[in-house]
Length: 348
Image (cartoon, rainbow, N blue to C red; front, side, top):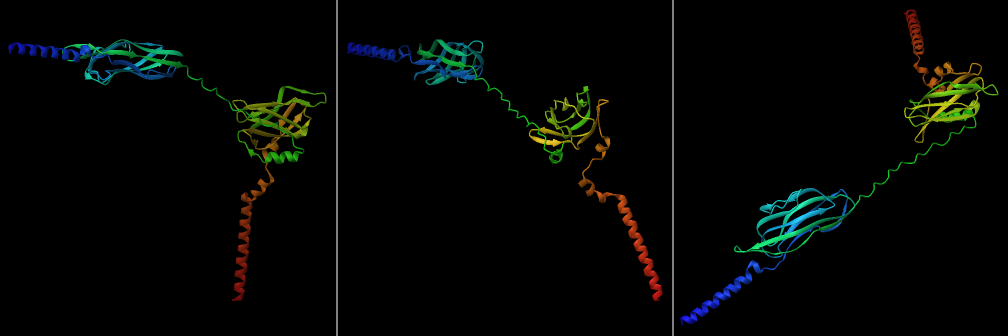
């Protein structure tokens, strides 16, 4: 009986040993992986993107893990360690991406860390993982269940060139045209709004001279206007239209190469900016003295030029008119009063 009991006990011990050996971590399958995610993609030079280094036990419990990580054609911007890692034996940093950490135990996926990186130049960029290790333990023995690792491969391209700045086409104002008659010119000119910025003076340039017919060349008009405005001078007496563009400071000048005859002339000035025509407040009357090579503004015309309509519309503003009317009314009232008083006494 004792012999039978010993044989059964021995058999049970052998069976238990075999069972324990079969479930021991030493016999566990290698299923764990260490990977970079995303593992691929198209990226732009100098633009940051995130890559996560994670460990997965493949369904088996693990307690520690580690690997060596390197990059190619990538700049490390920052590194954020995974919150599930409880202890670091080799702590990763932006200076060294190698790591080895521990957790209480996990069968799922654990984030070792997340990298923020950016491509240095156009071409291929890589994150490589080597020397992987994932340890599993039953409390008695430790087994490495690491199976494989997968890094990342990325295509880095330069940012597309910014579209070239386009400058709107500048539409030049139409060339000024002289009307058929001076009356038409004055009528068209008078319909434009007065430009308070447009100023004009007349004189002669240093090139002033007499032409073959005795007329004076080199008469000069100059002044100020809105910068960039086209200034046009219409001189009907000589059938001339001349133009100049105001500079960045608003200054402009027109020098006549054509000769002007001795005597009186009138010039009409128009400023054209962004398709809008405006005019000087009054036409410019001036006199040419070919003998003395001078051109001067007619002061009396400049001082008194107003429209008939303006003069008529302001007759009532004359204070002497109203003073006279008031005196006449007073006289009439006094005459009526004395006349009435005299006849009243006669009636009594």
